[in-house]
Every structure is written in structure tokens, then in C-alpha cells.
Length: 214
Ligand SMILES: [Zn+2]
Image (cartoon, rainbow, N blue to C red; front, side, top):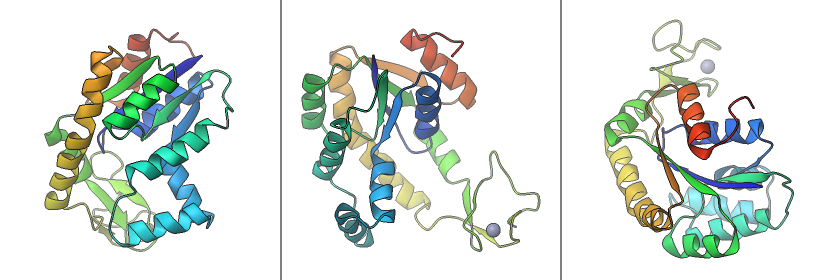
């Protein structure tokens, strides 16, 4: 049984690394963000609550994240373990989590703030069909024009320098105490998230002592 927590700032490739890891070792990828999105799309009671919070421009709070995580973990549908992404969000939750589950490691994808800015500010969205682009990798054939529908490529509304600076600051404020707690218990595996994603994945596997041929 392998039980991991994965942490990383926006742009660190956290979801994609968690998915690859989970798929290769038959682990269940538990993404709190995905659970919320599912609830919203399927118009559940919780989804309605989440939608109201997001419409007000606020973030889903820690207690709600805890409730959905506890609910999801209570399903016990993993045979080989899980990778949890988006939880715990604060010290109290981290302490509780360590007491309740036998965590093997916390994977921390480390990305300098300057690189977060470079990656996130390169994101574009097609105003026509909503397709995602990234000007660092995955550029359109014609600059500023969607390959699929010919629509104009625009930055996301909340991808401004100012908004991103606030998100990065909030991330550090919230995450550092959790990382410190985990680090004191010697659970944290720090992985440099700057290299290409295959390299990052290999590094994660080596550091966790996982067989590399999976
Ligand atoms: Zn388009």
C-alpha cells in the first residue's frame, strides 16, 4: 500500500504528475479540485454551495475541502494506495491527516515564483471554443489564432501579474506551515519542478523508491 500527498503551486504540473504516478502504480488519484468540479457539473447540493462561493469570487474553504476528502477517503476503493492532491490545506488538517492515515510521503513539487509567473502568464484561452493554449509549449500554428476554430486567443481573466502575485503569496502563506509540519516528521520529498515533465516524474519515482519500469 502506497499513500502519498502531492503539493505544488499553480503551474508546477502537480495534477499531471499525480495522474501519471497514479496510473502507473494502480493508485487512486484523489483530486479535491476535481471532486468539486464534478459536484458542480452534476448539480449536487454540495455543487450548488460551491457554485455560490465561486460566483461570489471566494475560495472554497478548508472545512469544505476536509469534508469532501473525508467522504472520498471513506469509500476505500483503493487496493494499492492513493495520491491525494489539494489536501490538507492547513496545519490542523495536516495533523489530523497524519494521525488518521499512514502516509508514506509528501511529494513537494518545487517551482520558483519567477517560473510560476513565466508559465502561468503564457496561458491563453480561445474566446471562441474555450480551447487551452500555452505559449511556451503548445503554441498555435498562427500567432493569436485558435487552431481549431480560428477564434482569438486571450489571456484568462484572472491571469494578470497582479492577481497571480496575490495567488502566489496566498499559496506560500497557506502551504508553508503545512510543509513545515510534514518536513518535521520527515515525510517531504522535494522535487525540482523546472525540468520537462518526464524528468520530473522519473525523479519522483526514484526519490520514492518506486520501480522505474512501471
Ligand atoms: Zn477555438
